[in-house]
Length: 189
Ligand code: FHF
Ligand code: ZN
Image (cartoon, rainbow, N blue to C red; front, side):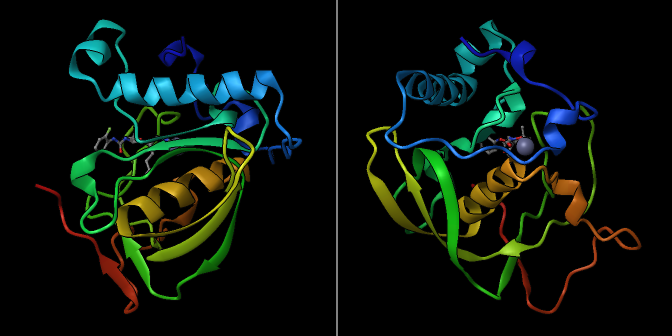
């Protein structure tokens, strides 16, 4: 089972490396790894299990964060964070962004990261809408359109596969500067 002890923190060089493509069809090891990553997210969002195993609640996890330099990311968005679209939950192998909107969106709280044990204030402007393509754990190619919260999370995960941290995107002079084509997303509930 993946716990916080398995998650590497900033300063570890693996977080700055480009992860390698996964061979398709995927091996049993990759399938197991992807399933473990998804289980971590589900457990971390469960009040009892997160308390029991001392897990920080997460909506995404990229393989480099557990020191596996492979292009694999798990995403599990809780229900209440999806307005119109159905909830997005999947393991993404070799994800690529096929299309991205010019219009940007940023979370009002800024972002955090399981590999960053400090608050980093500031807005992270990301594409508001993306179309991604990836292979799932059943070796099926999926093409999915995402917007707002789920698009932000997936872009945060794909950044990890490329050695990019969320704070690389924060404006140094004015962390809360908002571009005219960046929408501040609303708080949930
Ligand atoms: C998180 N947690 O999942 C953050 C961190 C924007 O690469 O957002 O580092 F669990 C992956 C509802 C709302 C339920 C929020 C992408 C953030 C990705 C994980 N938690 C949440 C929830 C959360 C990171 N990460 C603060 C841990
Ligand atoms: Zn992260």
